[in-house]
Length: 462
Image (cartoon, rainbow, N blue to C red; front, side, top):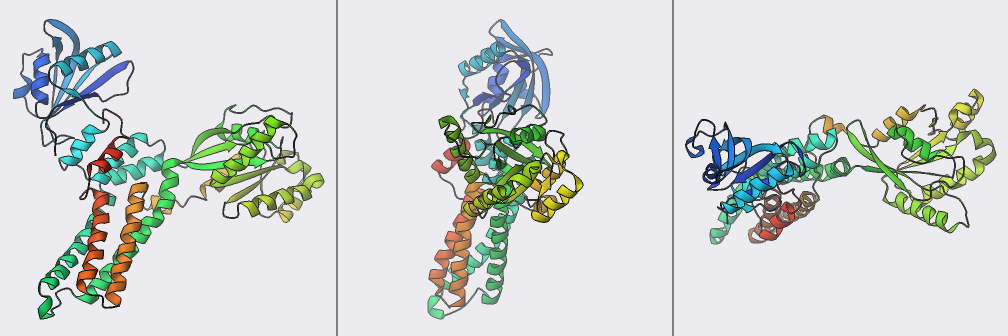
């Protein structure tokens, strides 16, 4: 059921600031706002036009709480689809609390997390995937995640799913009609056209499912583990990448005994770098724990950067190759970037020898910050940003991904049924299940538990 009570919440971050915005939405939002607002021109908010701004004071009986600007948005032409007002007050936490407490006494209740966006969904202002994109937009912290969230919020993903669902629904209706005339043995749905439609739907679903591999890393960042023996410059490399002294650097082997993590945006994509403890045989209990954690982080990482001291290659080259093979064998599916550090100490002949021994090597000097940009470009190459550049629909939401996989399974069942002349009533069941999964994405099929899980992750004022 669509609620009609009025809700209130702070729409700006909590804490002191120059300005704070308090949002009210509901059937009586404007009336409640009017009861505490005194316009400098004696206007009544209830008689003002929508999308107008008014200067005045918030009054608690005869006590003035603050001078404010009140914005009016009348339903259905508002974010929530309901009557909405936004009070822009001074950002004192005391003022914010006093105004919200006054509005609660006047008949509002505190909004639940995401309740403004939930009401926008319930009132048909957004579908469910667009509503989820609002949360993604708020949490986006790089260009790529922002671009995807904007595209989804504008309805790019929804429109693609809605179009497929509509076409499938049309054929489902014809097949249902055939069931009503089962005794006459009539076919209303053209089987050739239906087969073409199923092939097209299967193609689109596979493309959307495949895009999740890119979308997931763009949304959550790409974990990169920096590994290697002690004292080869792992912490120096992390500091060079971040352009700050994030990790302690010393000449003492085994300085890093725990993992250090930090994030960096490269080419609009978020990368989470993990500086790990140096891998070596040791009897130091604390260092041993750090080395064990190193292998755990390699397991979790999507890209592994293996760093070694290129100036020591002549002496320890064989040992290095053994370590490399060990990591390759233990983690065969993980992209591996092999980096020779301290390249500023090498002679030209040594550089040529290294490149002939390890063709894929990248030579850098973390201390002198030479070759760091080349490393960034190498890492960026692991992310397929072609779909992003072409503004294609990219799936980032695990719930959508799950529904797409289930929908594809059902479409394959329908296709198999069509090819093996399965009876219309059995095919109709699989079509209904596919339509159900499409509806789960856009919100045409919902339940309270699903909505509760989605909107519980929103901030209060959204």
